[in-house]
Amino acid sequence: MTDPEFYNTLTPSEAVAIQKQLREKVTLDPFTGPIRLIGGADISFNKFEETVYAGIVVLKYPELLVQTYVVVTFTVKFPYVSGLLAFREVPALLKAWQQLAQKPDILVLDGQGIAHPRRMGIATHFGIIAGQPTIGCGKSRLTGSYQEPANQQFAATPLMHKEEQIGNVLRSKANCKPVFVSPGYHVSMLQSLDIIKRCVRKHRIPEPTRLAHLLVNEERVKARGNE
Image (tube, rainbow, N blue to C red):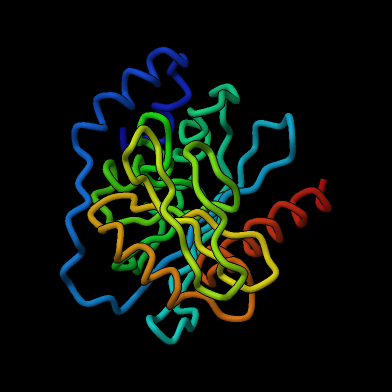
């Protein structure tokens, strides 16, 4: 599953079967090593088009200074199906990951970790197949229920699904909508929340994924302008 082209051969039912297999490999044991580099990953695409732009930014931690980055394009054939979006996004991110010379200790992905109906959001999926500790930080909820966190920076409430905590709802800035933080792979629930808090600066979105988002959108717009 580390071959990006593999994903273009799958049907949705095969993808669900893969998610169930990968779920058995999920570990949320705490990351025990020092965190010197943190990465942010995001994708961008024009609606109804097959070209996906994927980018990864690597930052020095905790200073959050950019060290390196990579952005790639990939043609996706897998259909747009709720709960299976990782199968559209992971191939492009794998291609970017394989070209990234300096790997981060922790990678934050714009999306969900275990905060997914089958506990297999993009951060968890990517983390398992890449063998990389990951955190998911999504701008919206995919599944689960929660109480709205207090309107103050870093207020947080648990995100629950079937009596299981699957993440935290974090108010990264007062007077802004919260973000949804969930462990992906080989990072604990509490670590995930703490690390994301430390990555917040002036914006609602933590710096690793915010910078990755800017990178891939810039590349997509530039490519459209060159058509």
